[in-house]
Length: 208
Image 1 (cartoon, rainbow, N blue to C red):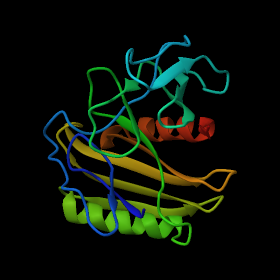
Image 2 (cartoon, helix red, strand yellow):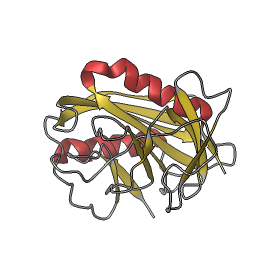
Image 3 (cartoon, rainbow, N blue to C red):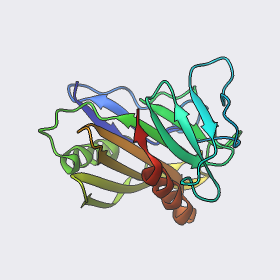
Image 4 (cartoon, rainbow, N blue to C red):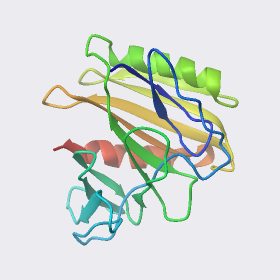
């Protein structure tokens, strides 16, 4: 199934759509879309009663981050301490957010497009779709990264982030040949923190 990354002009930063047709983007007003990470340094479910992430301490997580094993998503990743799975999102994959705060998020999902379509081409198409569907969208950069991956940086108006929101989406290729998208977003005025969240996720990410 082919997909295209697109920002949802609402609670979610990115949603994925079939190449043949898109889902209607939700408004950036409600408690619907997007995510945030992680938990306390104890190996117990973050969201009791639902299949999902468990947390465990890890020396590789870095100060301020906890490694989460996401059972439903099939991966482990470092998320900011205290962030938890968000279950009421409209996008694909797994979402994490700070408790009671939708201004920032982390989204992780497997890329379904055929490997014949390069990572930068996928993000180029995604950026074009975001431009069509997102208030005051602006592409900041789109550049290849090592290992056949690519990164898109963009901004748009977001009620959740109380102004401009910056998204940083990276497509990575894992040793088994799989492709995953990791996306961090937060207030544009705090872009350094958003970048730090994505870097921690990338450095720790492992499919299972």
